[in-house]
Length: 155
Image (tube, rainbow, N blue to C red; front, side, top):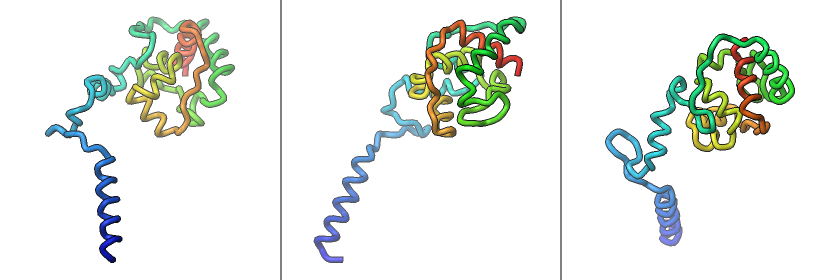
């Protein structure tokens, strides 16, 4: 390699390294410059503690409401079945057993607020990476989302 080629190579390599950032890392491996909200999001990644991001902050599930579940099944079939199959992976994950993996609040927030969830929620981000297709916002009401959730309880 001649001197000019070496200089260009070294300069390009240095520019690449500099452009990659290099924020300071703490001893625990986290980025010390990361905003507190990002740190909180990582801590909130426990799927059975994470309530997601959206309007649903708290939800207590009582006894299964079969009438609500039947209405939820109809809404699910109309709005969700193009991408989700009840008991198998498809374009999106199967909802069977979802309440064993996620909180009810998280499920409803994912239905109601998918755009913000895939941008900010660590679990939703991982799902997007896995399925490579963002969840479509069907503009459902909280009542419709709650009925779908009730249907999920029957799967």
